[in-house]
Image 1 (cartoon, rainbow, N blue to C red):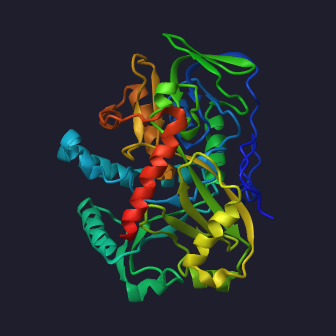
Image 2 (image 1 turned 135 degrees about the horizontal axis):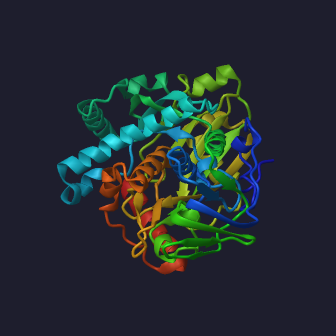
Image 3 (image 1 turned 120 degrees about the vertical axis):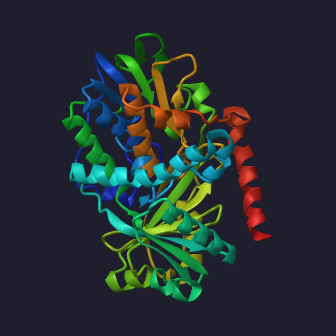
Length: 434
C-alpha cells in the first residue's frame, strides 16, 4: 500500500526514490572547515550553484539538512516547461519593455540550461521532449493563441501547434478539455535522478557536499560562520538555497516564501497499449485551473498524476484518498487501477510568483534564491547561473534584473500566513466556477 508522506531524513516514498539509477551518499559534516562559498540547501539551486562556482575555481561547501534532492527538487512532477514566473507583464512599469522581454527570454533559456546540464554530464534522467497546455475553457484557447504568437515573436525555435477540441485525442485520452497548445521545446524527466546526477557532477568538480548537516545558526560578518550540530563552516560568501524549508534559519527571508503542499500519485504499470490510450505521444500535460492537474507517463508506463496545491501547511492524512478522485475526473477509465506510490511535500510560493533572487539586506556577502512557485525545475538552474555570474563579477545584469523586483512578506507571521493564503486561493477557485 502507498504511504502518506513523512518528513524524515530520507527521501519521500515516491516512485522516483524507488527507481533511482545511482547510489549516492555524502557524509555529515563533523568538524570545522573553510570555504570560499558556503551553500545551504541541496536541491537544484544549491547543486547548480556548486557546479557553476566550482568550475570557476571557488572552494565550495554545500550543506544539506537531509538528503540531496530531499525537497521539491527530488519529488516534483518532473515537468520541464518554458517560463519563469507567472504573468511577467505586471512588472512592465518597474522593469520596462526591455526588462519584461528579458524575463520572457530567460524563461526559454532556463529550459536550455537544463538540457545542456544533462548533456554535459551525461545525466541519465529519462529526458523526454513534448508538452501540452490543456484548455479547461474556451477563453484559454485565446490565451494559447497569444502565447504562441509571443513565443514566435521571441524567436522560439521549437514546434508549437494549437489543438481544437476535436483534436485532443492526439495527446490525451480524456474528454475534459476543449483544446490545447503543443510545445515540443518543453518536456519531462526524472527529477531525483537529475538531482543526483548534478550532485555527482558538483563533487567531481571539487565541491564538498555534506548530507544530514542542517545549518542551525549563522554568524554574519566579513567571514561568515555557519554552524551545524557537529560542525562549522567558515566562508567569505553564503548562498541560502532552502526555498520552502528555510524555516527559522533566516526569518526575514522565510517570511517572503510560503510553503505550500504539492502531491503526486503513481499507478501500477499500465502496459504500453493502455498507457498510450491515456497519453498517446508520451507528453507532459498540465491544465489551466488554479488548483491545476499535471500528469505524464513514467518509462515503465505508470501514470504519474499530480497537483492539488495545498496551502494549509499540513499534508493530507491520506494522499491517495486526496488525489485519486482528481485523477478519475480526468481519466474515469482508471477506476480499476491500483495506486502503488503516493507522496508529496512543500514547494515555495512567492506573493508575486516571480523567483526571488537577491542579497540579504545589510549583508553584501549573503545571496539567496527561492520561491519558484511551481516552475522550479528550470528556474532553479537559471537562478544558479545568474548568482554565479554575479558572484564571480562576470555579468550581474541578469541577477540585478530579478533583484530589482520587490517581494512582499506574507501577512500573519509563521502561524497565520498559510491559512490567509488558503482563503485567498479558495476565492480564486470559486471565481473560476462563476
